[in-house]
Length: 325
Image 1: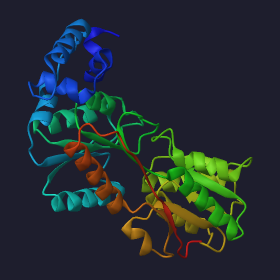
Image 2 (image 1 turned 180 degrees about the vertical axis):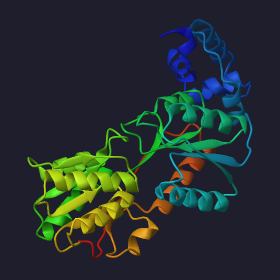
Image 3 (image 1 turned 180 degrees about the horizontal axis):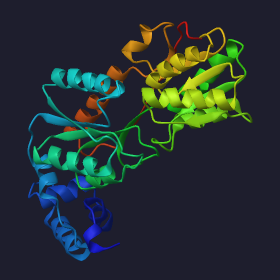
């Protein structure tokens, strides 16, 4: 490891103490012996660890503010999560700062720097392009952080994940229970690895029918048209999100197919609009507001108890049956 890459956690492992003890030494706090302080200082010099001054301010000060870093405001999923974060933060006497990344790595780093410069007490953040690297680095430098929907397990960091694969399996099982057997998946290649796709593949077994497109209305139209071109006899479509599913219904109707008579459609997210289209959309409900609220409670617990063991919360996904199936 290069010295410039050393983190607070590396120093803690070298000395055999907790990261919080290292942060106390770095910040001149109490709660450790002189011998421990000397060992920590020696490890800092040996490893070349340079404390992040902005991260240090998160440990020594309280601003009663938190940050939320989402992906895109154009996806109804994120505003609903933000509403849950804001409601719960208000109940706890906290103010929320909000930023989006548009799934761009540079914007994630800039958003993190902006949050830290405002001395927020902690951050709730979504990875960019399935890469949690910058978030993991921030956590290792002492930032109070909760990562939402990480692509892979992060043992030392607080995380909250919706049970996406199980939700996809349940969606396919529901379609089969209505007599559908030729089920296509309208997915996206921009958010990978994709647990919804993994759940679909597990559920359908040896006969996958997958088309990927942008997770937008335009992508849903284009993807559905490709599905119909490749498999004109399909009788069901399971979509990555509700926006793509609603576009799929339009594309199916344009092709002369009825929903659900000829083709059943299931979405994912249960955005508010999904209940008010014709036909109302069957979808997997992640309860975004509750997801946001749980994220705040997890972050607040971390802020109040920096030495506690990291938690990994699995948020349930429920089937909401409507007339599109």
